[in-house]
Image (cartoon, rainbow, N blue to C red; front, top):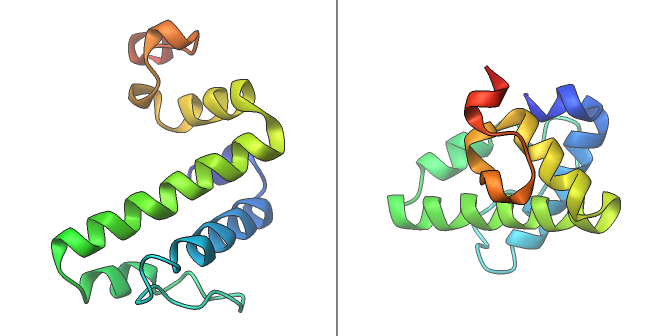
Length: 103
């Protein structure tokens, strides 16, 4: 997992588990995430629903994860961390590195 390079693997796992738990309010087909391997089958769960539902659930999980990160470490550090693992996601005007600068 690429985010694990910026944060610890354990921290990333906890963050994603909480994000999935929050997203379950709108997407109840998402798995209950309470064990050490609870995220291992997340992709299979998304494969088992329609494309639109899967995309919505993945977007909800990602949005919750970003919001949690921002709450824990602040907006600037969150944008910097996201820029390190997904450079093209951060517009240049936010002050984060551009995709070209990362090369």
